[in-house]
Image (tube, rainbow, N blue to C red):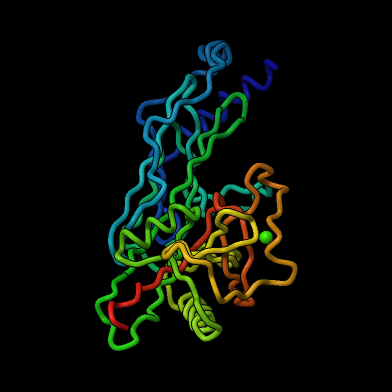
Length: 298
Ligand SMILES: [Ca+2]
């Protein structure tokens, strides 16, 4: 154990003594806490006498909205005794350890900085706070989101079919609220043609949308359909009426109970690859599709 403690302190010295160099063509840098240098001999016992979990003092927001070309500066900081390591990785933290670490490891605080955000920078980033001695980590994800222009003003005639796939992770309830806040509703295809149009809109959006990077492996998109009183009756949540058109994947809906035995699967998502539907766990976070509600008289 004593050897580990000394090694820990040596690592702190190594981190503290470096400057925060730019990485990735000057787009990222880590900022180190000022004035923290440890003496191996003097600090060894103190470092390991303390066994408290580092406290996050500046927590990055879960979503950070920024336009392409604009500056972004996201601070992540933590305190502890000893000061914890803080660094950023691009993407979510994974067990494989293969994620891309950005910039140097700092002590106490690290800033993710983009002088001018580019399309390739639009992604999920994770701040990692590492307890020096124990090696345990805490992670905080922040999702850099490019705002999209959502409105229903351009509807003409049967402009009813204006879809807005939204490439942000939200549970079903949050997705519904997001659409409504934008003056839209969660998409609810009412015919084979509408389902086809929505499916096309989703896949076209995946090609053009700057937020797409985060969703290459995310195939299910929330729709405005849920089961009502019973597990087998599905309703349009925007009208409360039973749906008349349905387009289930094979063996669906199945109200699978494995991950939520009390409630099962109550909310419907569309598979981006097949255009077909599955009932799923409403608490899961997924992208979703809004559409403009019908205009009165159309
Ligand atoms: Ca299912």
